[in-house]
Amino acid sequence: MAADRIETLSDLEARYGEPVPTAITKEVARLTPLHRRFIECSPFVVLATAGPDGLDCSPRGDRDAVVRVVDSSTVHLPDRRGNNRIDSLRNLVCDPRVALLFFVPGIGTTLRINGRAQLLVDDDLLASFAVDGRTPATVIEVTAERVYTQCPKALVRSGLWEPDTYRSRDEVPTVGQIMEEITEGELDGAAYDAAYPKRLRDTLY
Image 1 (tube, rainbow, N blue to C red):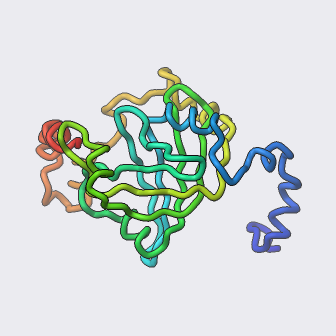
Image 2: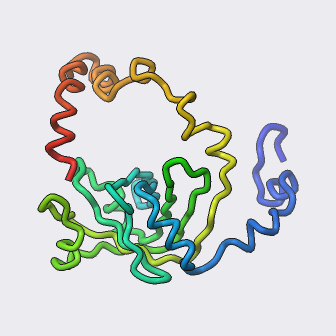
């Protein structure tokens, strides 16, 4: 092993030791009724995919539960309106492997599903996800292969849900500012940011 990096699995395992036994026990190949209850409380999920052009990690959110639990192995995630880059969907067409990480506001525990996905375009299914008369273009059907609850250490350490840790708006660069920097001033960042609230309202669904 090089002095400053790990290069083999045996080096890695020697450094960390054996997994905590419950971390092995709690991974299962199906959604239990309590997994379902957890997921139905989650309005936000991170979708991870892989494809020939690389990886993608995409936030997804909705007004209520972000996915619909169909049965003990299946969830449906509507693909709500976005910017039409469809990076995640391109990946799924080429490689069905997928991971979902569910968050519940105010709760430290997260829940992860690893599995395989396909894109569905059945008209009745799309219509069942309509909001304000607008239907998603596709529904991502995920078949669970591994389900795992993640302990709250990361969210506790980060203080993610603690108001005292919230940043003020002027501390964080806006998208307009970042785009103005990328384009070396060709794009007016202030104008972009000023127009965005209306664009968000008009294109939310």
